[in-house]
Image 1 (cartoon, rainbow, N blue to C red):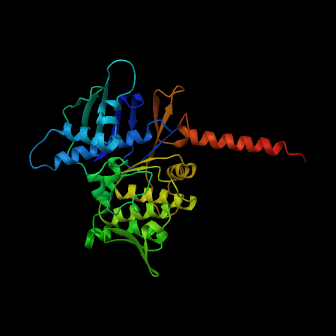
Image 2 (tube, rainbow, N blue to C red; image 1 turned 120 degrees about the horizontal axis):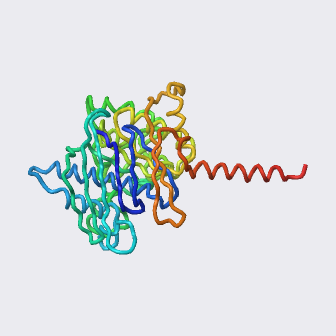
Image 3 (cartoon, helix red, strand yellow; image 1 turned 30 degrees about the horizontal axis):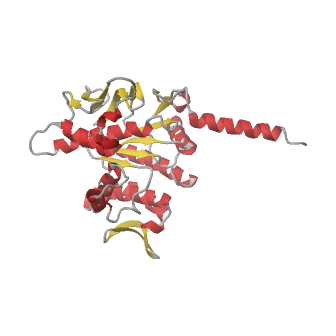
Length: 358
């Protein structure tokens, strides 16, 4: 089952927008405040709520679970889910329609819900089945904060949204065994090579285990901790075939050499059958994925050929709303703030070089 399309009306900064998804990798780009993280959190909340309800022994209404998840993930003031509706005068209602399909030729399955400024969440007739697990990786890594985090989150008010709590729960899973471990080993081995060892959970704390001994995960660089968390999620079965990965700014605190590792890893995950959603501001990550998509069969880097969809969110001049554009080639985006800013930089640099006295 893959997500195929999302249609939004009056949700957050998206007054009206349609997102067409690739079954493999989807890359969101746009300025800060354009809604990239909000769209990924919305998708994640819907998948998690439907999975939670589908696991109950008796049929249940998905609306309460969805409302609870939206509040936990977005953390609006006073748990007022109506604050997710686009701001403006008078009362409004946000509409969300998410479609999925088993294959490009199969009929679409649909889930629709509305949320009013008064906070009422109403779910329409849904044909969504029990979805596979989904993982949300925030821009901040979680290995260093893992120890005791879930208990603290349950007992106290912490300034973290629920994606961090969910991630720590998923990190608590033990490593797979037997054929299931063998099936994911090829995904983890390149990451362990970068880490210089394996990731182990021992006594509620993560360690990197290598020939020189064990090193506490929080003594590793933040970039390596992010790769370590991803490695553990692969090996403990949190990231599985036909599952979903949402990763917000994977490039944060990563050296450019590690960014190229992440680009290859995303392709391997997509080739394994995981539908990937990434929000990025990084020129290198964006163009590594674009290059792999444009020159299929030419890279010979050991990562599979995959389909990549680029989704641009353009913020209006007054910052009140965004427009949405989905394309199959990065060069076809009408607005690419990352490329435009790099071009402006080289323009300024060329001008300075031209004005240097000979």
